[in-house]
Image (cartoon, rainbow, N blue to C red; front, side, top):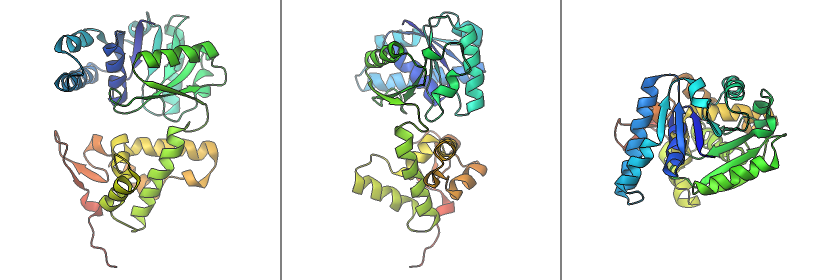
Length: 300
């Protein structure tokens, strides 16, 4: 595998393209507009510059990496030479199924079709293709250049040789692969999302404030980031979509989305990407403050 196509140039897509290019792969990065692609390239340049500053890459290596990333607006052109396709589009089943139909039609017969989905069934995605044995999940963690895990999800028909190829490939990327079976939420989100959801319920019920909840989980449980800040970082709309998949797929009330989460998504408070979620984020700054909506006087 030398030619990789990444579909979707958002946060996850540009991170995946970055990692593949850093490790010597030719990458075609595709999305619906030139503006999105140019923004993704700039993000990759900035992240590569940070790696140079931390002496993780030389300037020459960073320049070579950028030359391996080819922005392509046409899905047809992006898929023609792919050995591996990694779909990193929005977390909506219908959108992903449409993409997998196109990937199956346009990519070479030998190509492996992977999804970066964090919750949607690989078996369902494979079912719309003529090569279900070559469909697999590659769930990278955010930020992709930093986080070492790849959660590899095998669908009902995924061939063992394909799974092994993706395990080997993940190791070539400097990642630690963990293979799991295809159940709603897999492992990462099946365990993570109920915790984030419960933190939201605790806030909604007035048990504690935003900073108090996050501080307790950071200092008491050793988490690098509190659950409410993490939800902002993931995107509250993404959290809601994953919880809905879990709730529908498992039929367990533990996964019913917190009404506060639903209301925030309806209000357009999606976290870091909109500048406001449980915290507010200043543009171009790492500084955050609690969203004034939650700064209320409490009486004990």
